[in-house]
Length: 111
Image (tube, rainbow, N blue to C red; front, side, top):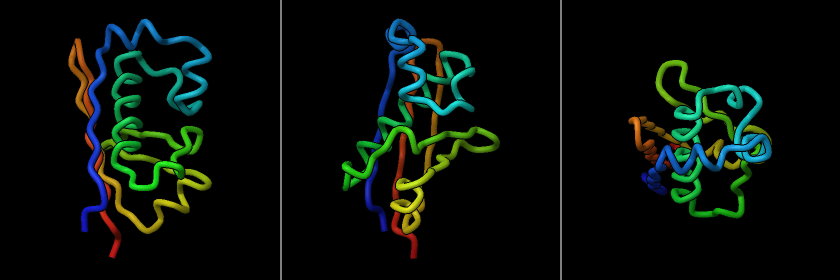
């Protein structure tokens, strides 16, 4: 059963103007922080799409989210987010273009 769907699009030029060390530390894991800004824009969109897809947004914790793209893009949840999402399957798709990055998230209840 589908529990939530979220989508987000990021203007890459505007996103690049926001990038600072403080911003990167707040929004990205240490494994992600050295990625190209284009990839970071897609991962930022993915986090926003996840937030929009969640029914209980008070459970959302940036520090407990990592995204890997080894194979298809996937969330890696840690700590409280791992516990919260243990009963769900979370599907993620990210697309990056020169000007925009977009992500969609679908959350379904695990049976």
